[in-house]
Image 1 (tube, rainbow, N blue to C red):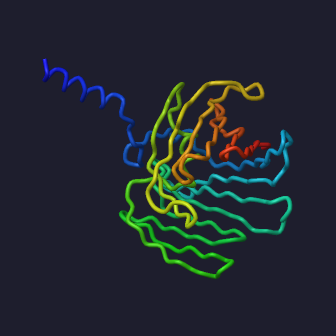
Image 2: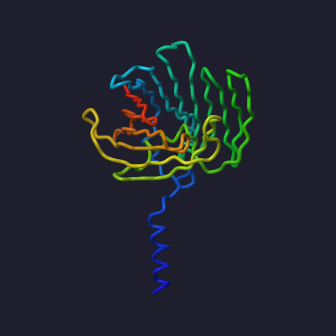
Image 3: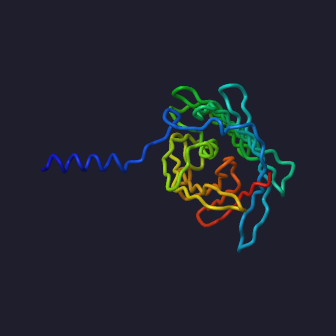
Length: 239
């Protein structure tokens, strides 16, 4: 009887334990991935009023048979001449990271992903301090690419998952951490059937929650609701 109870307990733990998703075990539908360019308006909410911050242009481009470029360009309404561009290259088949760069008004960053290490640099433009980056890391997604990864995953009602991600932020976390798909619901948005995918991550200790509204047919992200621990923002795709 004691042996049976031990086996039952072990089985229950295995049943309810969350599988950690990595490039080694992720399932992606490659037919959904196409070259595209989309634009979203970025709003902040203040006392129930939406204030436009700027526009975000996202480009997906297959560089060759194996590599996918994810490029975002931010155009701020109050600083139209400011340059802010993030570029990430991943393997199309499983989103294994190859390269990530982020250049904006406050800092420059470059990350190159090897088999077991991430190398690159981080330049703080205010202090002009440039820190070299060399960290052990393997079998992870880049933190900038996992929202795109979710688009092309086999979504279904009540789906949850943990993802292994790498992030480098001197003011938050550095190295391997987790992102979480908290819930998936099928709902409607502007007359279209969408997956509402609720997510968070360890970058800010799960204080930021982002809900993506993803077209069930095209898998385009139509809207994002962002809760920054009380402060709210939205991204609404316009094309």
